[in-house]
Length: 285
Image (tube, rainbow, N blue to C red):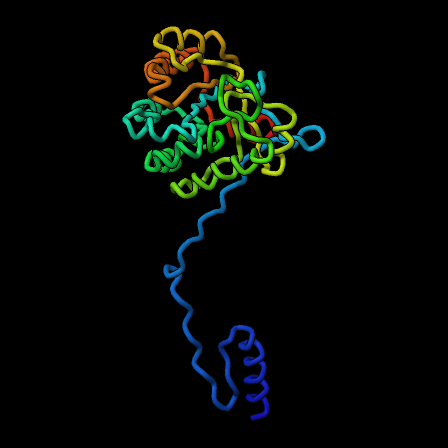
């Protein structure tokens, strides 16, 4: 009898760790474990998008193109511009989106990065969500207002220095409100205009400023062949091409893309998003 009690005590000690054992005198029936199928598999956490290290004195880093000697890759980027004061023009029928362009990129299976203003996302939330959910694309920040971050920038109104950071943060808030879930930590200055003061003001946001090394010339262009030719003559391995996703201000971009994409593929280029170029520049693949 003593041996049986000792055995029961030992089993209880083990069972206590499993929360399945009672006393030797009145053992409890263990509760069955839930079936494996009842636990939903956890979704892997997304990896953090690659960014550049801060510049000298902690300034916002600036990225212009990827490595030249790391294969024939090229990033097509599209600025979805809409300034804070263009609401009346949109209400009157002017189109600042370009659904045909996005459809063409999908049909041609071209990855791309869309630099979107917060005001654009407010005006076209369905389009913003659709772009965000398509794995071919990524959305990055192009300010809320599309006002310039320096003086004398293509006639754009200027954001006061003390409001530069809040303008960028307001754009991210507009993306979130529109349903964009995965906006990237990349920022493109309106007009590409920036100076040391602007880089200082945005340092706390943690963004990488993304410029370009190929200007398409599609803004207000009327000749798709000329736009395509300018891009094809300028592209080098690792290039970042700036185009626009605004129907009223860049009416021939979609047609130009239909000429650019097959020719660059014929030349052996592979289209990538900006995040891949930055990751490659960091040694990340």
